[in-house]
Length: 165
Image (cartoon, rainbow, N blue to C red; front, side, top):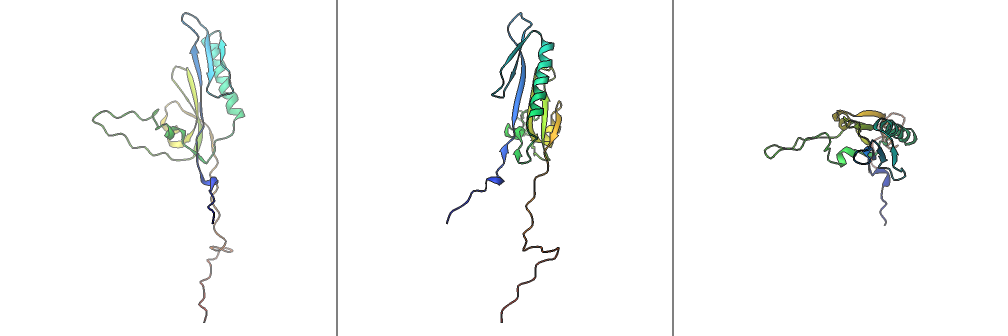
């Protein structure tokens, strides 16, 4: 007797990628726009303003071309131990408890200086905890398994089994 694996019930870690704006060298105005997606090549641009515009356009192109958030995805923020929105506990403090929850969303998190943009598939609670996060899409609700046909037929409860005489 064989055992079948139910791959449909397995959750996958949420996707995440980062677009960065970095200086090319000392004393130069050039900047490098890089993306953590493997197919993207780095670009060198003449100024930070041009680089920031190119980085935002690059990010928007990924968001338009990419699929919507998956309802079966596991929170990418939780996979990284929520370190971006939970401050570490000091030596005399207990770590703050955190529970992920809500719908899976695709969120863009930025730094305040405009040097990097991170896209994550995470839960709605983690997205709300990031002060600079912007939700760009929400996953559809997961499909619930249908009730068994033997449990309800035409809205009535199943008949009780009869004892054979």
